[in-house]
Structures are given as C-alpha cells and as structure tokens.
Image (tube, rainbow, N blue to C red):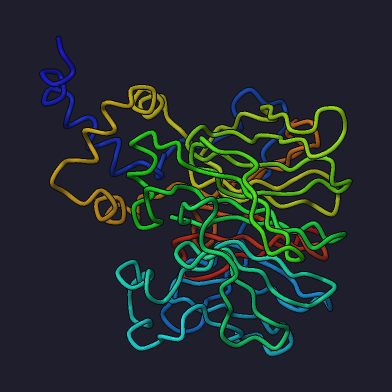
Length: 374
C-alpha cells in the first residue's frame, strides 16, 4: 500500500498521537536505569506576576540575586526573596501595548518577544538573552530594554533562538537556533516534519562575530559548557538525546552521543554538586517513535487543515507529571525525580540548582516550582 493510500486509514491514530504529543501519561522509574526515582512533592509553587506564563529558564546575577526568568509576554522578571514577589527587570521589545492579557501570548510573542535561555556575564553584569524571535540580546545590570546583538549567521536569519551558555573566562557565548524554518509557535510542526535546520553557534563579543559550530541538527535546544571548558553539551529535543561537542583535547571538533533519554529534553544546566540537570517536557511513547521514524507521515500531518498547536494546548489538562534527571559527565543517570503531588508541575523545561534549592521551570505553567533539596 502506498503512503498516500495508507494515510487516511491511520489518520485517527496520528491525530491522537499529535494532540498528546508532549503529554505522555506514562509514569514510574526511568527506563534502563538502576537509579531510583525521587518522587518529590509537594513542590512550592511561586505564581508569576500579571497574566504571564512559562518561566522556561533561570539565571542568578553575579551577586546571587534572583532568580531571573523570561515569561510569555516578553518580560524578564526577578524574584525578590525577602519581599516574596516578582519585579519587572527587562523587556525584549519597546512595544508593550497588547503584550499582556489572559492567555499564553502566542499570537503576539513575535512582536513582544519570548525570552528563553538566560545567562549573566559575571564580569560585566550583563544578562544575555536568547529570544526565540529577536535573536541574541543583552541588557545591563540595571535592566530596562534589551539590546539586539545578532539576528543571523552566514546570511541565514535565526528562526528560533533558544538556549545559551557563556564561557566566563573569555565572555564567548554559545547558543542554539532550533530551526531556520519554524518559529517557536510552530514547534510541533518542527518536530513532526523532521526538520534538521537547527544550529549551534558561537558569538565572540570582542570581534562581534558569529561562527557556526554545528548544523543539520534536529531541534537543538539547551546548551551547557563543561566546568573545564573542554566540551559543550547540546540537547536535541526531537531525538531525545544529549550530545557532546568537544572544544578542546585531541577530540576537538568531534560530536558524540552522551546520553539517550526517556523523554523529550529541553534545557540543561550544570549542577554545583557535579553533573548536569536535564528537564524533560514529557516521556516518549513507542507510537510516537514510530511516527518520528517515518518523516512522510509527520510532513503530511503538518499540512492538514487544523492547528496542531491549538489541539495540543486543548489537552493541556491531561499532562503527566514533571520529569528531570541529573547526568554525570559521562552521561550516567546520577539521580532523577518525578513530581506527583501539589499543583502537578508538568512540561518541565529546566531544573536549576542553587543554594540547596531546585528551581523548576515550565514553558506552560503560570508559576515557577521550587524544591528545597538540602
């Protein structure tokens, strides 16, 4: 049977897979892992100010203040621990009219901005921002309107700027462009289509040049530089894996698989106790693996006359529990947790460990999660 004839017969199954794409209901211990799952909860939930959602990534300033996080209406907000509230720190776009409202702002984020990866340069105090629409930006220690630094590389504009990390020894910024074809609003189409236009890049503030380190990537997402600066870890969301790209040693310039994961990873952050925390949007399912292994199905699904993203959002109430793992330098699972109580934090985008606490981000929740680890 040809693909075109077979497609109508399997369409109901595909639709079911699509609308549940990042909402697998599987729970339990990590597959192929001897490490026990720490079922934590309830987590403390810290509501965001205003109507924004989606504190995807966190950063602490050089004095230990924060965390800071970017939210769906284009703001970057700072947590004031003593006052137990968020305060506005920076904005991505000078256009703020219409940016706030009781929704997740997907219809306006290309105007207002959608800040994702964050990192402070400790020597200058500048906050670097990977905004999914505006490219790589920075804002000074006093906050305010962020300044665009770069929006393209080699003549190709960024389509979905996502994760970043900074080599604090020379101020070089490593960051990802998840796709040059699909924007953040179309992230499901990005995955279903099998797009491989993602890039890992390097920005040198001294020369103000952007260089391409890796291309042909499948939804490159979070990045984390190793403590000794010898390699950088790169998340490929579509392929559920963490890659290691060597910057130094005789392996410099080579790429290898560090870890295969049981879910769809988002950001990766170095832990002060060693290793790296990886947040996962949801677990993967065998049926979904079948879909992704047949690109013609995904491409046909993307062309159907219905909004995949809206269908995905409509079933948000069925999300599974949050999932994250801490990996060693060699990709072994050191520990993991799955949140099962409290508010049901799901779609985990990031886990950042600071001062004995785990700050847990989610691209869809109206709050940040915090777990007192120590």
